Image (cartoon, rainbow, N blue to C red; front, top):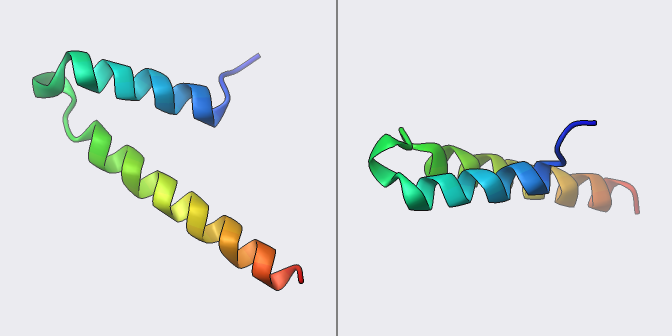
Length: 49
């Protein structure tokens, strides 16, 4: 069984905190993906009403 998106995000956030110089922009990419997911969820919720 694979990781949930939430678990993967938490692991990446911990990695970035431990190795910021080696993270290669992971935090920014993760935050962008999280914003897109929230936006998509909002749009789907509004359309479903």
